Length: 215
Image 1 (cartoon, rainbow, N blue to C red):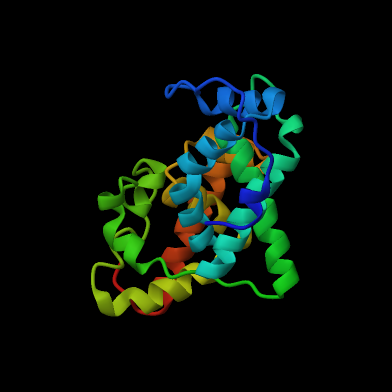
Image 2 (tube, rainbow, N blue to C red):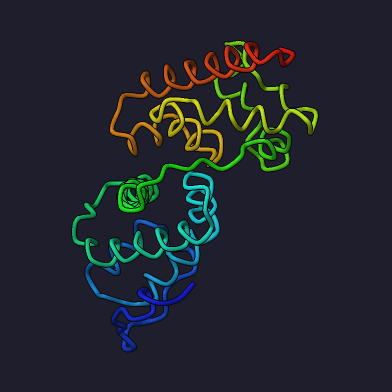
């Protein structure tokens, strides 16, 4: 990715960055010293992960790349807002979601990428089946996408989820976040994250059952 991010200032005189610096040390180092290498390391660490999330969230590769660029531009511009003691990852995702919502409003569209592949390959990605979001405590459509012919039905069902439930599913299922991380990003209690996931599973079951797919 290139463009806006590459135009940010550098500090060639700074010492080499330790490879084991945490995200928090990097952002605070960039905040205090303006060392471009700290910023570049953060971009490198989150480039694939955050872009993947934005692509799923927005349903468009080019828009996702634009939002990624805008997100790290905001990280650059607002790094002084990051407070010691906070975790960088939830803060970054909060910035990214806000940028994604702004982009959707500007474009006057609200698209959702298909979940059929992820529903079939969740274990391969290390996130587990969708039903595992609730640790097996609630029935759900975790096996409803076993056959390829069901993929379009699944996509449509997920597209019908309320936005609040969809955000929780994307953060916890797609990105593998802990409930507390998703709660911090969405500015809601952990219990609310769980209830939204529970509601999402119930809604998916209802929609797919209505469309005569097996439970």
